[in-house]
Amino acid sequence: MGLFSRTKTVDLFFVGCDGTDLDRGIYGFYLDVTNGQIVKKKFVKSLANPIAMRPFGRFMNITYRNGSGKDVDGGIWQYAMMDLQLGLAQRSPYQGKTYVDTIISPDGKMCYGIDYYNGEIVSSPIVKSKMTKIHLEGQLSSSSVDPIKQSESHPSSLCFTPDGKLVVTDLGGDEVLIYDFDEEGHLIFNEEASFKVEAGSGPRKLIFNHQGDYAYLINEISSMIHVYHYEDGHFTLVQSLSSYLKEEYDGQNMPTDLVLSEDDDYLFVTNKGDDTLVAFAIDEEHQIKRVDCLEVDEGPSCLQLFENKYLVVCSKAAGTVESFEIRAHERNGVLFETQSRVSIHSPTCIALGKTQVRVTNWS
Image (cartoon, rainbow, N blue to C red):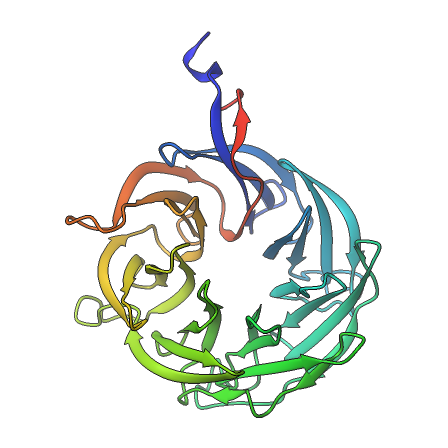
């Protein structure tokens, strides 16, 4: 048997890419869990540019930019995942709107989506595992001080609190909005739990630690990371720290993504402009401290954790997908290069598929 016919254990993942009619679509990859090496295995062309991917169970939602202006384009597309195969299960357009994030309710009965460009939150009931018609849940109407990015509301990400409330970050309004639900899953705005951030911050994405008592927020405009204590449905700001070192880079910077290690010991953040992957250690008081940094290719757009051991960074401007190894608590650093990089056109989003899969067709 040759070198490339030996069995390997891999994690599967998908990357969505902008591009031309020839290279725009969804790419399927293997990541070797023993060394972090990545290889491109599959490509499916799409008619529009993918913006976001969100897996849930055996399905994955993918949203596409509406480049035609037609009412039947855009929307939310639901696919069934079969290893690296994606089979279209349902397509739900809504007035040609483009959605930048989706999420499935904890009970699996409702899908929620956000339209960054029109400031809208929508929902779609899930019946027999399939999405149905999209309904408008709410129209955001805030603004803030940045004349370019904050002239109106721009919802940018979705997540759930540990106690099951929906969180919407409004980059344009400098707000983190919290919603409860009625019996049918429709949204009820929770004004008391929602909060403002400092004017001109531009909240982009919020995530919770695995214990559910702390949340981490990156701000696109100010490049600040905010750490919040979460208790009894309320957020309390405990720390603010820049996502990059201003003394090392004096240009315009934007944190684009963040992930936590599975043990909540580290927070990892990508910076576009500074073009870095930064590791922050999290202490017993849940304060973060910058402990390592590596340069990445130009314009990192998204980040994914694998096996609590590897990070994959997609860089849209450079057109690359590259992996890095995490070595926790080492004296010489936390982040290390694997020297594994694949070139594809303008990657915009990433999603994890099946893990710990045994394969023989690596190459």
